[in-house]
Image 1 (cartoon, rainbow, N blue to C red):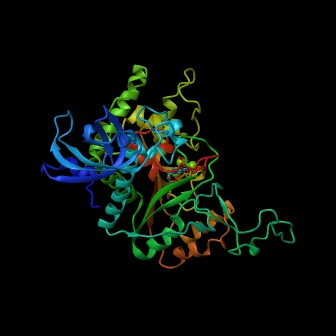
Image 2: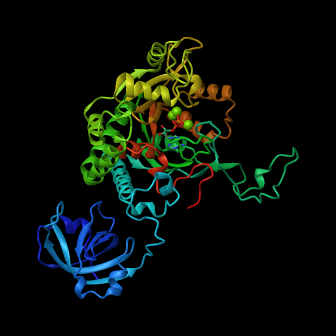
Image 3: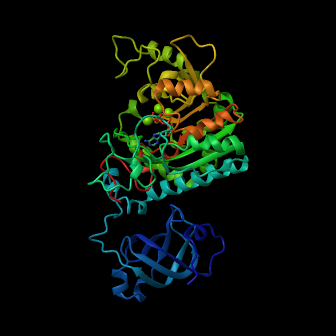
Length: 481
Ligand code: ATP
Ligand code: MG
Ligand code: MG
Ligand code: MG
């Protein structure tokens, strides 16, 4: 039977005609009022049951979680906060839900409990909202790049390359683990493996993406990325989605402009499209804030924070300036940071990043020109840097509540400099012969960045744990679903 979506029914100004709706019961009050949700919107439609003419057997089966089909007159509603309701004339139970066993009863569940029920948590208001926001953001990502003439490139999930050199890779093998073939030196003989070489799940599509940018001009990837992160933080997943644009002839300043423009576009698009979901999430956060001590409460509500980001320029600060600020903010006696930074050359911890954003500049920050030693091999070395203080044209974008959301750089376009750097780091030139071809044939200035999609969803939804913004989180010891 043809049925209408709840989101369309709720917007309808044309009442007094028969409609059919299908969805899941959220609540059933007084044997009369069903709050029906079909996932199309955070809002439920009220269905008024004619209980005198409905068999008791059917009324008993209208329980939270049950799938039902209702037909009736769409009518003006006298209830607060709703314009229309359905005066039900026919109700069919499509799928029962045992009220003693269904875990998603209408009460406040802890996020931990919900994570253990990742397959059902999307039936709650909060997770329905988060997943609709996530989907809208993903659409905006494609729309932004497609409108700007970028081409969408799918880089391989199985690869031999370790772009970041951080060694956090999941190995891929078809070899029998209990009987690994060994070579003469006693090491695993990957020549006997499926691909005839050692392979892993991709940690970034950048290197492959660069080869395409050097032909198509402007490309982006948007796909799953895998890192065997040992850490159990609220910002790291073992499987996450990364957006990686790469643009020929762009330098570092162009790259910063692109990243800022891109983030603002997708946030703006989503704020406009997901008003109801974001208002709901904002309300949920405000409730949470009330339980915190005054000093720890957030200064801005969610939508205010999102609008602030849209309306203000990201602050661009060099790494060297940032270290000076952090050093000055860390008087020796009064230890503000767990890890005190005194040395130029140290990598920033997320507590430093968040201090710069949340306490010092009070806006998103783009840090650039990092020490070469703490960044990946492919970044463009700055000209005229002091020996021992070499910097690269890298940039990280830091966001409130999150820290690093983007990591990017202008790439080293000079073949000789790149090879020298690879040799110094012990990176096998022969393994990356295809990557080096981009520098052998028609090399040019180019740059790009990687944005962790879940970190963006965290920011827009105001959630604080990355496990709560991806449908099925993968973290150490967690691949249940
Ligand atoms: P971090 O310092 O937070 O560990 P990173 O510097 O290792 O991040 P990059 O290699 O620069 O990360 O990757 C680009 C982007 O991908 C990051 O800015 C971040 O948004 C995202 N990202 C990296 N690792 C993860 C992860 N394990 N889970 C989710 N997102 C991630
Ligand atoms: Mg990392
Ligand atoms: Mg980092
Ligand atoms: Mg990074």
